[in-house]
Image 1 (cartoon, helix red, strand yellow):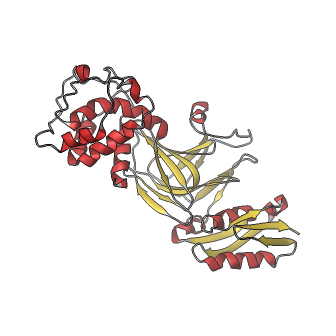
Image 2 (cartoon, rainbow, N blue to C red; image 1 turned 90 degrees about the vertical axis):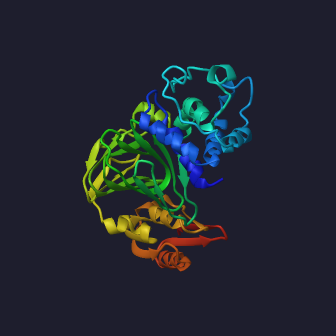
Image 3 (cartoon, one colour; image 1 turned 180 degrees about the vertical axis):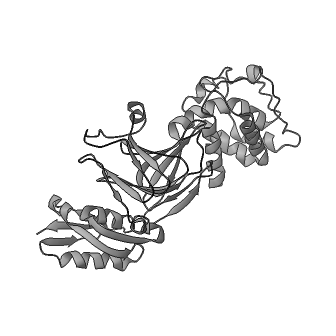
Length: 356
């Protein structure tokens, strides 16, 4: 099945999280279902993943192929009736069980069943799971989100999108992403990384989640960096912060902040060319700690570099390298070998950097 169709189906599930839905949204959802039986199939397959689906369909199993066949049949697609009683279902708990008697499972239209039943059933699933996007080794990806915002993912990155009518939330689970946020004052755009959140409305900013902490760089507009609340920490695998961080903190265009669990937040003016060089597949370092340099090279090289000696965290690197040219890693290692007190041990899959 087309990846785009699966992503569209997941996006529709996200939109129906709360008890109240916009009538225009329901109409757009219905039109989307009518476009192709493959849309029906994608939505049903997501619903089938819902771990509690059997509670709503104890009498009979959902037959995806039969429903799709019905959707293909001439005359089977009909408009939804705006009845307030027959199809009134609350998302927090379905008002009617999924049975033939209670929801008119005669199925004259696949859209009619899906619009009334799966809105309630699918919302819980997506609220917990979200929509995920990942990149592999050396891979970069641009993503257009449902609200008009866009995300550029660096290599070895992973985000989870959880849009609702009240909030646009993105979990940066690994790696680096540049966000261009569409303005919507009624729905704040929030990026979660480690145990902090970045709040923005209509702006551009880069978030780089590293082992040492998270760096936020503002290219346009303003963002606020805040600690995650206890409830938000409960839905993400987040470590506990030290009490030293100076948050909340507001960043303006051209400013950068690095939040770690070992020291207070460091705010300074950023070199935007350096911070976003990865988009041109370049690695630019400006007095960057060696462990962070190794981590950036690791996004693009199968042989992973490991800084074994903690003392080398104070060794800083400046220079420009190609992210996609294999010779760049060799040049970097030759540079390190020329430094007094540094030893390089190479194997087929690892590069150990340590003090002599």
